[in-house]
Amino acid sequence: MLSNMPKAVFNGLAALTVAIPVLAWSNILPVHNVRSSALYFFHESNYTQNQHTNHTVTGGFATFSWQENTLQGFGNLRTKVGNGDMYELRMVRITSTDSQSVNGEWDVFKNGDPTCAGCKGSLYVSPPGIGTEYLKGYVDNGKVGYSFAGNLDANTRYDY
Image 1: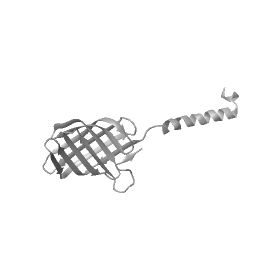
Image 2: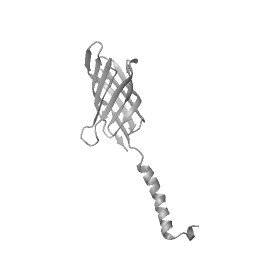
Image 3: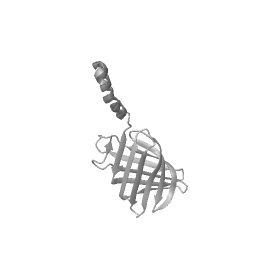
Image 4: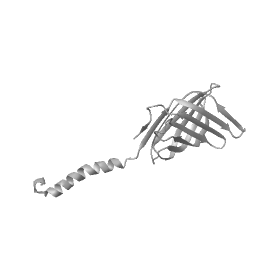
């Protein structure tokens, strides 16, 4: 059958065979992955008691991964503060994403005890190549709120 096909038709089909996978690949939405072991800011607000605390961060790690314009992703932040308390913020549901931010719902734990379930929050990551790259975010439910920031670890950011 191929031997009876005009050369122009054969070449056209060959070009389509190459072009279709390339077009399909180009429609895949970008994925981003960032890590930080250099958290430098953690703020806690208790709105019901009108208390606001800027904690001294003594250690912490964060990792976030998401696919742009989808509800696919993962996020977790753990930090230890000066008074010995340990906080964990888990991203449990994503509501929107783009190249530099992830919005959704978070669960927050203090020393293993839940303090904020299904809290609304956002993560922002600086664009690549600006020098010192960082992440920052907040989680809030109107009664309690948490803000955080940290520098991204060198050579651990992936945008593909």
